[in-house]
Image (cartoon, rainbow, N blue to C red):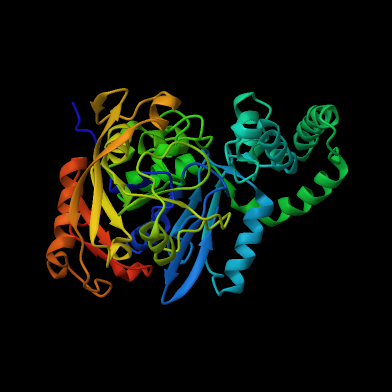
Length: 433
């Protein structure tokens, strides 16, 4: 019997509720990669990347876009707004990023103008039960995909089929808009706009499943880039306040069209504290002068929405959950420098739920909302760590903080980050072979 092939691939996933710094780490690792593959979500995501003191914001485009030698793939698990994609590419070109390789899966679904309109309408109707979506049309696009009403990029290339699918969708959506007193959308306007878009992007639309598989088989270094975080997974997140896809390493084979052994290493990106945007339970959340300091020093405002993020202490229960459902082999601790100057740091090691101590995240919404964190406390540090280049250079208390996280989560810390620039990332263990 032949040996199972071990590929040279790394998956980068967020382990909390997103905003962990995945874009920066993905971009850092992309310097070694031959291919970067974004496998889920849409432009509801936001990555902020600093290269040579210049800041770039990505929402749809994979983080390897800055290197002309890297192939950037938008896989079938994504839902892609082509209007937003072109706007993002235009902005990158204005910033000097003009030479790149970008490919769109022919099986990926399109986010259409009516999806955006539906997203806002549904959120408004939910009232106090609103999810806090970015209103980018992501949920309705995934709904259409599941109900088999979606339009894929391969369908978009066939003008006759595109007309049929668009007319059918506009008819259905306008019935809904009319019923709820909303302005209807125009088939002619959408068709005219998207016909122009087709000419601009048709050369990018290919079978990315076979492209990525061939790269893996050839021994290329492939980096899988996730959006959001595991706690926002539609299946394993803090439902219903989640995204509409699965940002786990476990979802990559389906989201890209690959065998189960396609992911060699699963790297979880872990913020040195916890943050959350929007509604939903947050056991370690606190609001005082320390949280305000963390928010300002860490620039904790959404890249896409500009909303201030909620702040909490590090929660090892959340990251242990992410490690289990995503098969984490390594973790990266980001924004460690933000905690400099805080006298006492806390790590939640378990919860009390209905009088019972547990380290497992409860599935029930009420139970999670009422979970009381049980903390250990560690002394902080005052030394500036933004210029350290090795683990040994860290202050003793910073080292102890990382060791405590590693011990409580049960996954080795292989990297840490001490500033926004990708060069402020320190390797303890290398990711690619």
